[in-house]
Amino acid sequence: MTDVLSAPLVVEFPFTRSLGPVQSAFLTGLRERTVLGVRTDDGTVLVPPVEYDPVTANELRELVEVAATGTVTTWAWNPSPRRNQPLDTPFAWVLVRLDGAATALLHALDAPGPDAVHTGMRVRIRWAATRTGAITDIACFEPYDGEAAPGQPAPHEGQFADPVTGIAAPARLDYVHTPGRAQSAYLQALEGHRTVGERCPACRKVYVPPRGACPTCGIATEEEVEVGPRGTVTTFCIVNIKAKNLDIEVPYVYAHIALDGADLALHGRIAGIPYDQVRMGLRVEPVWAEGARHPDHYRPTGEPDADYDTYKELV
Image (tube, rainbow, N blue to C red; front, side, top):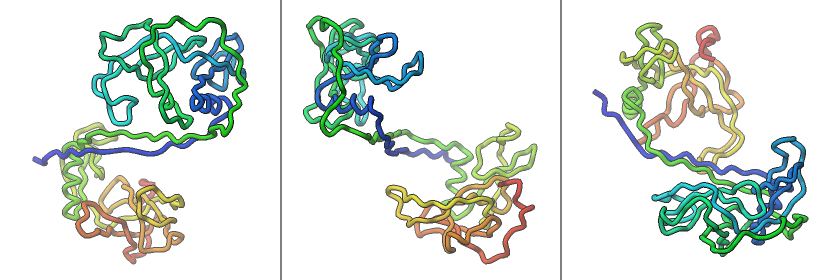
């Protein structure tokens, strides 16, 4: 029986976005230790602010300043902080309704333990020592003994020097991936420069990479079938944007490739040919780098192009 593999896997990308006038004012305000909300058509103050009324969908621009103190509306204890969370010691995730606001803001509360946290407790913002115009300018919340700030939120023009106009939010997911029996066999075969799939006992189609079950019939698959190594380009795209940490010069071609004997196209990079000469029907074969566990790219075999009718069901 094939040993089932497992390995740590990280999916990471930076999400960059521009800011409209309301979000720009909110984040720039945090840099200046000022918390801004927005007033809706019915007078409700929303913090964090939004650009459109959630009830009427009208554009919102009336900014107001709320207090840096507030009340916990609900909470959950986090006993094991993870990478890049606000605090590196156990803390509470809290929803805090700041004084003057009608909605709650999600952030961390620095507390000695879950017994020290309760709904209705008073808290205040602990500002970060270095502020750049991001939600992390609020380092966390901390317990506070004072009463709610009196009066209504004061109007604010939202004007600051050197306003923040865009943000880059890193997204990262760390997990352990276990591919299962079928894909473990597929990956182990690749180490020997072989490509294997599994045949459905009902429809007789060969799926590569194998899933352990036929995606069409829903029946378990066990019959291993070696395919390729040559195949046919079914569709492709030309990549013009260089990926971070990927040492491949643009433009290059990424294609779906139907390996001989397979009933499902897999994807791979095409090299060894000018990018503008790659075409549907091009016959290709894998190229393995020394010590690699999977093909580095596919190159033309020099054979005549495949007839469209031979791969049209895989496009």
